[in-house]
Image (tube, rainbow, N blue to C red; front, side, top):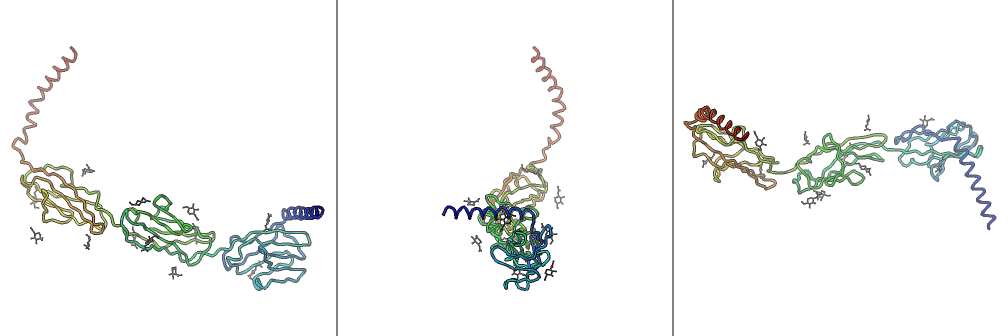
Length: 337
Ligand SMILES: *[C@@H]1O[C@H](CO)[C@@H](O)[C@H](O)[C@H]1NC(C)=O
Ligand SMILES: *[C@@H]1O[C@H](CO)[C@@H](O)[C@H](O)[C@H]1NC(C)=O
Ligand SMILES: *[C@@H]1O[C@H](CO)[C@@H](O)[C@H](O)[C@H]1NC(C)=O
Ligand SMILES: *[C@@H]1O[C@H](CO)[C@@H](O)[C@H](O)[C@H]1NC(C)=O
Ligand SMILES: *[C@@H]1O[C@H](CO)[C@@H](O)[C@H](O)[C@H]1NC(C)=O
Ligand SMILES: *[C@@H]1O[C@H](CO)[C@@H](O)[C@H](O)[C@H]1NC(C)=O
Ligand SMILES: *[C@@H]1O[C@H](CO)[C@@H](O)[C@H](O)[C@H]1NC(C)=O
Ligand SMILES: *[C@@H]1O[C@H](CO)[C@@H](O)[C@H](O)[C@H]1NC(C)=O
Ligand SMILES: *[C@@H]1O[C@H](CO)[C@@H](O)[C@H](O)[C@H]1NC(C)=O
Ligand SMILES: *[C@@H]1O[C@H](CO)[C@@H](O)[C@H](O)[C@H]1NC(C)=O
Ligand SMILES: *[C@@H]1O[C@H](CO)[C@@H](O)[C@H](O)[C@H]1NC(C)=O
Ligand SMILES: *[C@@H]1O[C@H](CO)[C@@H](O)[C@H](O)[C@H]1NC(C)=O
């Protein structure tokens, strides 16, 4: 028993040593790798060698053997494989994805065994992006988009929102080997357009854009009067109040004065030749009929008489100035004492 084991070990070692020596000397070089489906690949030996006989196999299955000028191609490769009987180079045509693998050449004349790995890829065609639902509610719904191809192998997916790349985060998930994009609790900034870019080492393709319609608001309201934040005006002025709001779809806007609805809708409320009794709180009320939400903003307007003493403050100041100077100098004197 023991002797037997030793003998086997010796043979294994011999084979290993020979294998290492020869494979160090000769390499298999594919004409192209990765290769595109339907094309031809030639596997040549480098440096070129003269082989009288040998065989080619991929994984465990034999492709062909040759001896002198005779070659025998295995039925599953007939018409697709041939060997150059002088150099031992294998030519495999009309390759398919299934032809990917480790190709091993073996020859008994010079104890040669070498291999090369080949990947056959299908080019990508017809990249399609689909969303299962495009009408979404901000903070309430999730956007799901799935990217698919009609053909293509070894796919990598890259997602774009406009011109920025989409990366995974706590709200953004990429699943199914990155072919599905899920945005949880969408916000108004998630409308897209989204695209998926699919690539493999031999081709690439970009999908159609997909937009989401996200309902949001009304919120972030602002109210200006005559384009300013001022709230005091003179009798006889004309006032243009402008109400702005973020909302999708656009909010319906109404107005109220001292808590009572006024007969004006839309973003503008105009008052001509105002009088004192038009002082009070003006509100802009917003309603979004998709989110079913309300919001409002109010401003307190004061309409004042153009007082007769309108020019008095300046006159007073003129008289006050010397007095102030006196007081100031008194203070500075007392400060020094
Ligand atoms: C390999 O085979 C294909 C198809 O038979 C042929 O077109 C091509 O020229 C061959 N290539 C070489 C290097 O012999
Ligand atoms: C291919 O050759 C390398 C050394 O060149 C060897 O390590 C590897 O086991 C070989 N693979 C096969 C499948 O023969
Ligand atoms: C592209 O893919 C879509 C969905 O998979 C399919 O409906 C369409 O027919 C394909 N178009 C072409 C030209 O292959
Ligand atoms: C869209 O996909 C999400 C998650 O897979 C699912 O919850 C939702 O019901 C789907 N919507 C439609 C309209 O199929
Ligand atoms: C999405 O919103 C729900 C309800 O507001 C919340 O419970 C959940 O944590 C949110 N998920 C993420 C990922 O923000
Ligand atoms: C998915 O994409 C990320 C980058 O966004 C990448 O790091 C990861 O390797 C990809 N996963 C697969 C299975 O391709
Ligand atoms: C996509 O393919 C085109 C040719 O079809 C090539 O010019 C381009 O560089 C490729 N882009 C990427 C990112 O691989
Ligand atoms: C998607 O949105 C972009 C701008 O955000 C717009 O230019 C484009 O027309 C929209 N596409 C569709 C199909 O609605
Ligand atoms: C009005 O006031 C708000 C906040 O106080 C400010 O953000 C805004 O710029 C002001 N608008 C004008 C026209 O001064
Ligand atoms: C107010 O508007 C009216 C009508 O447009 C105009 O005749 C009047 O001159 C305006 N008054 C002021 C103070 O701008
Ligand atoms: C409000 O306006 C509408 C149409 O502009 C008009 O028919 C209606 O009489 C007005 N109501 C009041 C109270 O002014
Ligand atoms: C909802 O509001 C939009 C925009 O204000 C309007 O065009 C639409 O007719 C409204 N729909 C309903 C059902 O009231």
